[in-house]
Image 1: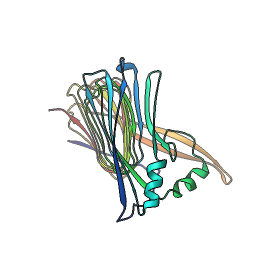
Image 2: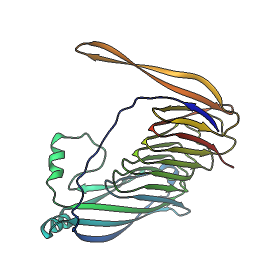
Image 3: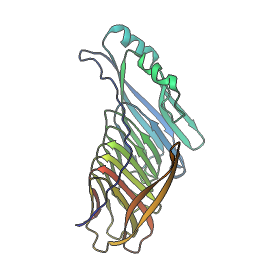
Image 4: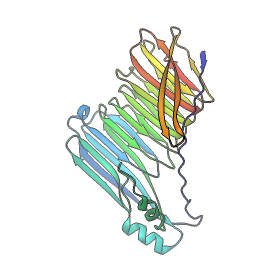
Length: 289
């Protein structure tokens, strides 16, 4: 494979959560939901989980079929009873969107963070885990996120994909649509049936980034890595001039400028820009055999 090395400094986001007690009491429940999806190519399924894995598979139907294994745990009966009573999921379907999220004791939908939310979370003397298994029409668009305790697996979904994790891997199989995949601690592995026709982004802070495209790929690959390298087995990969961006920062001591450098490689005739970024891991752009 061809190899290009590119250093990069990048920011680090950390999330620390206290583990559940060793002898925790548990309450388990299985939840089934269905939502109509008559026009999947123009519809979006969003799942905002916090603890637990998410698996989504495409199929030839016209419904979103959701299975959730919910577990509430606590070190004592009082905490377990509180969790059973207080913890709630939310389900919204309006327009072209279906949104599944945690509604209580806090809301996991994207919103502006308030300072009092952190202290509110620490007062709940129980833990929870949600394991999702979902079937969607092949052409569905997805916005999927979780934070702890689980891998995200997306298979046979050909719509646009926005997939986010923090402490876990992301695996995407047999995709076609534009992709934005981002994790912090975990490998990121993607395989395409056909290459996306629009710009796509792939990021893992601590993990290996591996993306496989059809042999007829034509694209521009832009990559950054602090301690890893870029590899490809496409024989027609051609190095392009690097992209340099200058960010201006104003401080009391004066104005400073930070330069970011991204290396680029053209494969085939070029086309859509695919961005790859890691801090501690290699980047592999592979050709399907």
